[in-house]
Length: 238
Image (cartoon, rainbow, N blue to C red):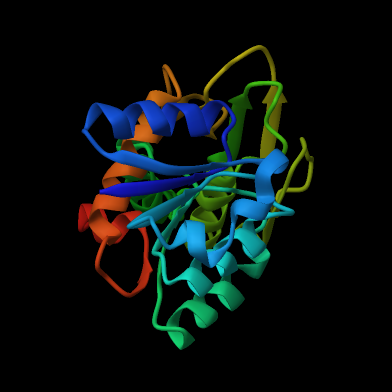
């Protein structure tokens, strides 16, 4: 399999290492200094493109992949307000898109646990809920895409919550999502339910970026040769 890497920062280099470990070729390593290479001639040499860039550039990069007829795996977060439009365009052009806010297998199992737990805790209003996420100082979006996914899934189940806020809050109707940026932390997400007498937590802690890169390459294997819109639920069948 031949891979185009769009976004050659720390995550892009982890993806390169994971792909090479599996014996795959790298036909393009695009970053801000060589964006002119995101054209159909060069992109078209790839079987799959992996896009991990910035919220401001992700949409254009994905469209460039569609125009080149190349399936794209996208892990860029912070831009998903425009994701429904891109999904419609993907279907219109008969192309393929695999999007996830987090490619860790463990995190996606946490998503499933979170939905189940929120449904249970909906019956116990004595417990208030909170999300905390910690990432490295280089992360551009806040809260993380993973935290937003966790929060939105909780809001579907917790009838006492009407929305989330990226801060501490005294409002019982709002779900606080607390963000911290420190050091080189790959990513830690904690969901807490707290009553006056006890605390229940579920947590995922990434030990290195390689866990995300490995998942992204697995997604590339999955999407190759397909058309349509896919998520980690499709890959994991959960």
